[in-house]
Amino acid sequence: MAAQLTTPATDPAARVVGLRERKKQRTRDALVEAAHRLFLNQGFGHTTVDEIAAAVDVSQRTFFRYFANKDEVALAVMADAEDYFIECLRGRPAGESPLQALRASIVQCWRDLASSRHDGPSGVTAALELMQMIEDTPTLLAAHLRRITEQEQVVAGLLAAREGLDPAVDLRPKVMAAVFGGVLRSAHLAWSAQPEDSGPDGMIELIERHFDQLGPALAGDWRS
Image 1 (cartoon, rainbow, N blue to C red):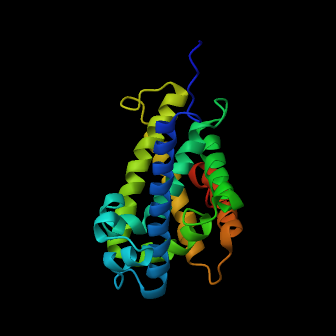
Image 2 (image 1 turned 135 degrees about the vertical axis):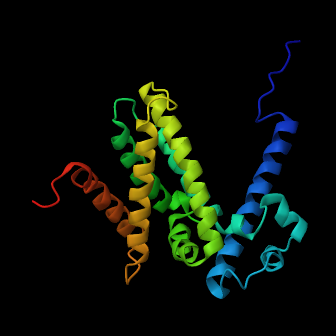
């Protein structure tokens, strides 16, 4: 008798692993969503890890299986968005210039996160709501800026690989990654300073406007 082919769909062990991973993801999402809600309702400083865990009906020990501290769960939404941006950048066509690839990737990232398939704790609405809290909380801002610095190194490495360059010798990938990070942070700050919430469309418009000014800012005659 021929041996029956075992696939992930028919392998009991694979199904158990799949169920376990989905359960872990649901718990993580629930913790992020509960933390987000508590932070916005009562402030970051007045929210405890115990309160976040209790809102999801899990123990403090379970919370620490997913997040090292309160800062990490607060930044989880932004971290997920940043990771998705890196995924978008990796998928850009090789024929695009570094700046074109970066611009297209961040716009794609925000549009996708604003779509219905990215609703919930990792959605763009959650990210936008947390931006001002991050800016107003020194410990969160410091942690966020550290992550941005780490992301710049990843971006520089990806750009160097796309162009066949050695980033240890050619400074252009690092410079471009730093410029991109500065433009994006400027757009985020501009969005946070708006008197009214313009939502994802407003953020995308601001990002596009900032990128439109990058060329004139770097090479244009400012006095003309």
